[in-house]
Amino acid sequence: MYYLLIVVQVYCLYHVYKNNKPFYWYFLIFFVPAIGSLIYIVTQMFNKSDAEKIQEEITTVLNPTKKIKDLEKKLEFVDTYTNRIELADAYFINKDIPNAIINYKKTLEDTVQDDLYARQNLILCYFQLKDYAGVIEQAELIKEKSEFKGSKQQFCYGLALNALGRTDEAEAQLIQIDRPYSNYAERLALAKFYLENNRTSEGKELLEEIATESKRLTKPNRKLYGATIAEVERMLSAL
Image (cartoon, rainbow, N blue to C red):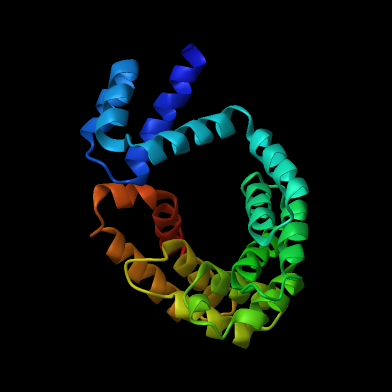
């Protein structure tokens, strides 16, 4: 029961953070764990679908492979596009990237289905493996789609192009991620790209923009992007 209480408490704290709930919930859940968590669940989360989701996520925390085994059995019983995508997603979440790739690629054999989702996730998988050729291959099949523009996949595509020495093409992709008051980690990577390519003034200008914006962020957002902001400030002090 003690360990279950800890899991529930951690999940409630994560839910508070993820949904930007008022700060007092942190104190209530942390300092009055059992009662605080119960009050939070009943007042902020509880409905049938949420209760089922909470139970599923707690089970996943306690036994990360259970969901995968259940989905594997489900796929063995009925091999459908949806079941295979669910299994691929579970592998991806569990950081089993090779098996995620196998199953995402398998879904591409179903030509009736839109290939966008599988290819989006294949880009992320290949990027984690530093298989930049794989990233580029998948990205170039969907780069004209509106969902690709300004996405994490486009960012990975830009970095993959840069890693393979295609710097002009890389910049064309990376600059599309440069949007004020957002994409801080991606914009930091773009600043590094400029500096690595001897474009110091552009890199410094972008770092200064991020630093200026960071001073106007709310406390929760400043905390959220704290590591990125700290690196920006460190880089600026070194220039």
